[in-house]
View 1 (cartoon, helix red, strand yellow):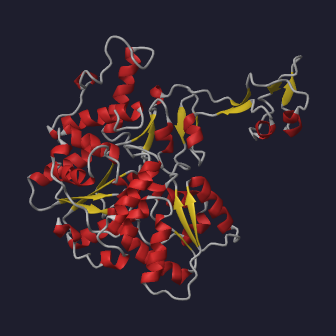
View 2 (view 1 turned 180 degrees about the vertical axis):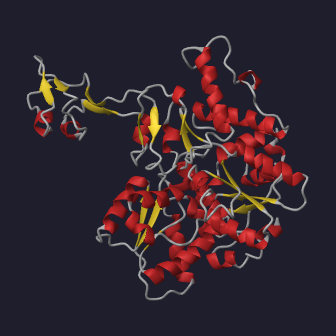
View 3 (view 1 turned 60 degrees about the vertical axis):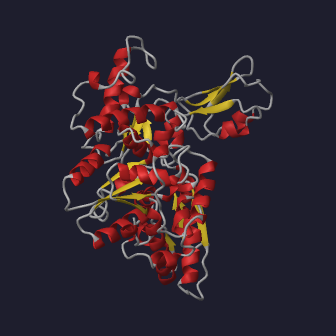
Length: 480
């Protein structure tokens, strides 16, 4: 359990692990009783009102572990029956109201929704309230609170609402697959669909087929994700699963930084392309700015494209912290290069499904990216890398004026100003997740520690600048 932030993550991991165990042996679940007893509810409910509901929810979790609803293009899905109808009453007056004489809440409300009882305690008329929040802001006792669901609070693009049955509902036209709701839902009622079975199928076929090799491309945010085990042992564990070699997505980041520096100097204004949720957000909310998105593919797709050009028969699986990558890899411009995507959560489940003892493994190595490519994993890393690339490419006379947007709310503010022509910056680094990729929903752990781990990982790079890393591009996997 200490490998995960929450018990919800642990439950999800256990389901993934058992589904994977069956898949390795060509078996699939055909009924709930196939699931081991440590997961299946017994005669006494432990989490819900009854064992029947627990079993029904578990069935839905198994379906998501096996790929989810194929008719739903979104990587994020809601398990309706698992949604606990969290309170969502909007602004409410709590018992902290002192019935003061100032009545600032009444003065702040432009809709006349605030009234008072005989004790001068405030009340809100829901038929008049427009959820502006002004009453809450002026209350000296902080007695007025906004009762939003955790998923609604987490979703900064307002893609989550309530269905007629009062369960959470996702608007796919607004959702950017960032997974913030997945991580914040206390009941695990929102989850990302898994392609773990596809990855197992690819690996199993490669065992009996010498015509192609399977490569794992790992995101630099992998540093520090696996508690108590060195990164070298994680690399060895990935190979134990059947991957021919492990390649850094950070090398793709070096390629992207090099390309974006030249594109920026040529066009004069650019938004980064590395975060698929950020790119999706621009397409949905700022369509007039799509032309300003860097034409470089993301680091994942860039390195995969290179690998396929060298070895067209190869299969490439991306492993990272990002649920939005599960949507990105299905796009027509990426699909030819990336065969599947799994998260760090799913990688842990895969490793444990084969009972691989990571501490007992020898140390593997990742040594084909620069410091700057590796720090793409944290907020500000892309900006640092593009600045370095401008320097290495000798782009003189160009003034680099970046803005680092940490989280989708900061992205929105910068894009809004840019769309109105009042943004003084010429490069927008957009990260949908707070802290960058290290804050991704598919991480095993979240927190400031991960940023420090990424910086340490970056400093361990053998290649200290971008061009040195790019000079190793004669198929880096040949060194594995």
